[in-house]
Image 1 (cartoon, one colour):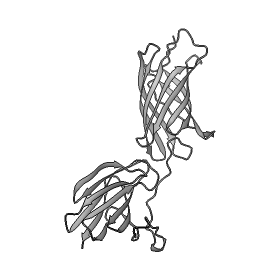
Image 2: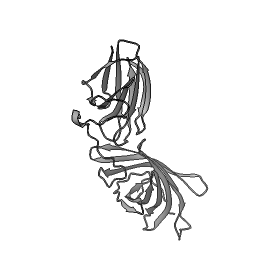
Image 3: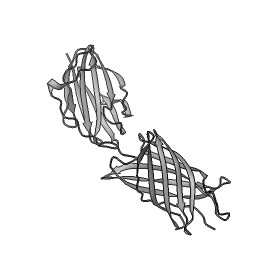
Image 4: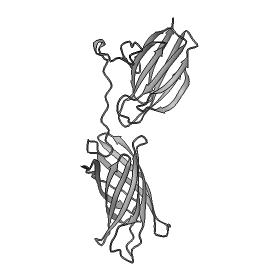
Length: 287
């Protein structure tokens, strides 16, 4: 009997090419079963947004190949990759073979120059009974051909006054500023309210921030996106401190947050960048 089932330790090469607006990738590796048997393992799929469709091939110890349809998805915000073998595509199945289809749940992160992908899988047979369990691990170089690649982000340079872009035309903007741990910004303020917007002005890669007003949390573990997150902060003191905490740097360091602050009809634009766990500070002094 040829049982088709790993515990999977896989080292793969991921080869992409574009096909009718979609990208196609190939994963090559080795699947090792919990009982010790190793299998060459091959996955080919196309991506359409976050969705994956394609097929897998497991090569048996006797040289025979088992082919299955796969469907899945990639969640770049959570750094997860899922795929499920949905049905057998084997045209000439061995009647003695137990068909066991994988359901894999993986996460990935950037370590040095490579992406590390790891997770677990379970297998079920045609009677929907469990027939295998195990783990999967992959490596992939961090380059533009990678399924997981996100363009590397660098700290923004301090802009020159004569190159400052204007915010919304109806609100005058003072020159933009860059703040980080140890480098704060002080603003003179006219009103009792600060309207603050936060967003990711670059590639969305999982930056997470917490915002404090006078050491009290007003926004907790918020993942920055392109859309602006608005907060209305009541300034109860003569001197108020707004703190931006870098909770997570995402796929590419550092944590970078674009910040807009409105004091009535006056606007201020600030970029905060920090390593994980560090804080950037804005001090507001009411006139």
